[in-house]
Length: 143
Image (tube, helix red, strand yellow):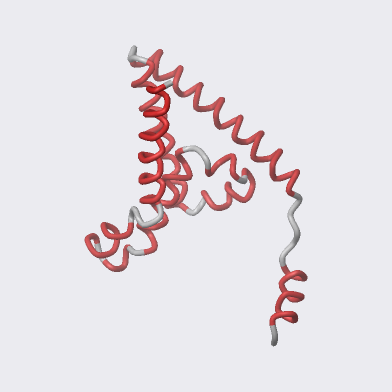
């Protein structure tokens, strides 16, 4: 089988997605997740009588825990196929990459498997998040 025959076969099997529908789906589901996050933040503010910064931290932690649990149970990928990028952009996407990396290498043990691989995918997110945070913070302090 050559490359052209393979491409024809793939086009028959893989259905073509509608980009406009995907954008709208991601926008709506991302907005709903953002509204849900605001509701959780307000609940934390009301229940625990904490500062807004602490409530945001609790909300972020909640999303990481929920994303990790959904990944571990195998539901995250099913939800992702429905929600598109509206689900993966928040902290749940970060949690999904960490948990799936850990699950892929768990058979190699805690040190060489999970410990060495848990940040394999998320390391770049952390690196560039910190780097651009410093750069934009510096630019903002100048202006």
